[in-house]
Amino acid sequence: MNADERRFGKAGNELAGGIPPSPRLRRDRRGCFQEGGIGQGLSEGGGYSGGMKKKIKKVNGAKTSPVQGVKAAMAARQRSKAEIAELRKMLVEKSGRQVVLETTGDLSNAAVVNEIGKLQVLVGLLPRRIAFKEGEDVKAEGSLVAAANEFIREHLAPRVRRLEERTRVIVEKELSPHIRDKGALMRAVAGSERVRELGRLSCASSVQPQWGAMAHAEGALKAWAGADEVEKKLLAEECMAANFVKS
Image (tube, rainbow, N blue to C red):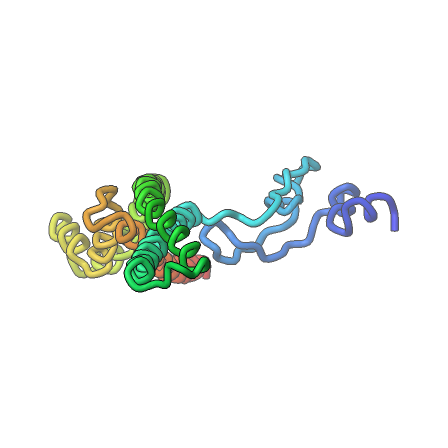
């Protein structure tokens, strides 16, 4: 094995020696398989671009999902609500125990008196702790709304618009042989079930939390999952159409 083979492997040796690379199958931007070669550019995995010996910067680590920020904010809000619920439960339990010991406990028993003292401290402190946690919960709610709105503006809404444009193209091609009038064709496309389905996803892209922060975030994530399903179907149709044209 020569120096080129040790450094770049077989593919890199072919490039360094000027030997034309053999064709191989690669995916295009839609995910469809196309015939290409090493000379047409390896991508982010650390290969070469445009057949030149210019190294592409390797992408380290896994790609972060756009939904991670929303899910993290939802988890923080859920923890906040759970902490408040636990504190309220504790206050009810300790208050009840305090009343029982103060009214019927053996006050000559040092252990009973010590427990009463601890309960009095806890019952006095817990309302202030709950009030503090409720203030933190308000902040967590605001952070959740902000995270959901950012996700909608930066990711969900643009994605739904792109999917709607791609869907309109496909539906228009399907209907155009049957509807010659341009205006009637556009109305038929807009009224098709597939386009109206994207319209329902667009409604979930609102940045106005009408039903509370948690429901707002859950609706955005549900719309994102719906967009995943729509995109899978579109991708299959676009690949089929591309392969039909090539054949």
